Length: 400
Image (cartoon, rainbow, N blue to C red; front, side):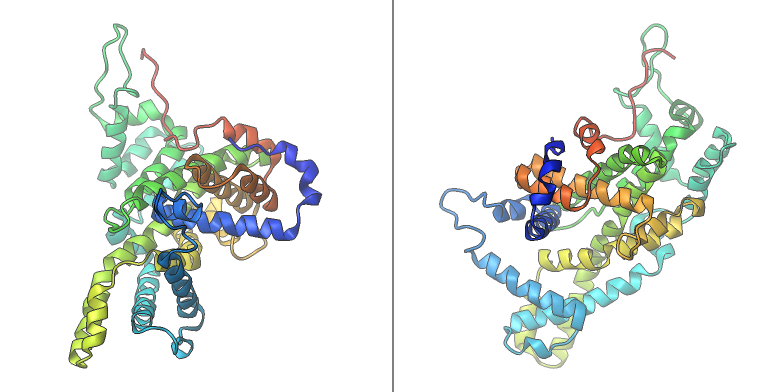
């Protein structure tokens, strides 16, 4: 999948400029891939016959203009530098400035976010803590599971899938009818990965029009990061299950922001249109009526706040002794913790693998990118031969 070992001899020959450009290229392409495969294909030059290149298109020019405005919205929150912008750009900037502020405010109340945005209870922290107690029994796990009916339902559904269903001595499939039986099939150790996987799955945004691919790409990214982290961690004498949880739940930060963006978009627009009508600003009202969710602003929102939201969420939901919130925080506020470093490697590997699978990046760019982040060479072969997008379930044996 990703050739790497032969690049060590070339490390000293790689210029800083090459590393920076490769890193920026990977990040930009990946962020656009999360929103839409078509966007990243255009960036990679995969135009169809008769189409103009992305760089020459009006879409590219609009994107460059919007990115400039987004930077102002995030860093300066000022309209002074927008004097030369069009009315549409000014209205879009003002609209998203207000929308971002509303999103940030709601994202700070994690108890409400978990219950009303993610559909989970903050009490799930108790379940995660129990799973990491050495003397935990399945009975204790079952008691905690009763607080989360959605989780019991998902686990029951999985163990009854044909590929995972156990069979009796005669080869007949066994229908699991109780959560106690399902938990005994999985075992406490497997649940350390199964539960975070299910939390990520439940947290995914459902309605993201006009970008329907977001859910699929987010899930792929979260699972790939989790599996990659769980495989890299033991190489650094760290716990693979803790790394899996960190990798899976770090992706929920993006889910929170994306859900809030689409949920608050129409509410904010209605409020702005009402204000424009009150002020008799027909021109502004017309612009607002045509505004649609912006891929560029959505990307800017995630780049600016996703890691911080994920850090707060991990502190709020995961066992304190694992210090996953601290590891997440170290990604954007050095120095990095050992597990934070593993997460960095895992998610960068997940990014390049997703891009490579869709032929939206060159192998040369992958090599330079991984070298630029100090990716461990001994992890490459392991990850290349792993199904990093696979769920944490294993087919049951044919007999009891």
